[in-house]
Length: 270
Image (cartoon, rainbow, N blue to C red):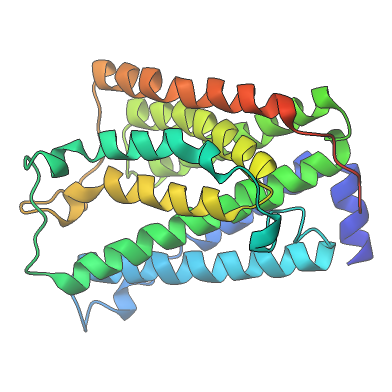
């Protein structure tokens, strides 16, 4: 573990790239064939992702504990949490994202309660592991080297958020999204990354980021559990929709950069 600590301090970006690839690959292992004999394909896919994401999250927490960074990654006690209200923009965006549900345009298929439950667990696991990986681990490790100054804090947030965005290229590689949709995801994931990073650092807790991330994802893909749902379809987008997505999420990035100004430099502990 001492060698790993030394490596993370000296090469935080390389370390971040390695664990990003490692854990992304881990969550792409196809276990559905083990479950399809007992349930439908969609439920099998949700269970597979939930299991893989949950195990990945646990492994990352163990890694953070070993590096002595668990507290700095935002795993703090409730009495240490600060300014949780700062997460409000993502909740507003989540409601806008789910507007088709609220106005009745999209109707959830309530005849499949198990599928709905699995869908919720899926998004909780995805929100958890992405935040623990990209904010809890990658941002924290990079901050240990560059977060000692104000300029370094912004650099740490941008680099970790860029890595978070680039992880979404996996959707194109495994043919879940077309190229335009993937590029759009990379851009707005970068914006989300800046926002969630700023919230973690200002809140002194990773939990608001995990919860709001999961809420946003839940409202964002409700069509998968709706009547006539689109589960399994390759996600495509038009240039107009791509530009709208980028314009709507850009304020999150600007807001994140704004609230970062009150984040104090950290003290290196590894």
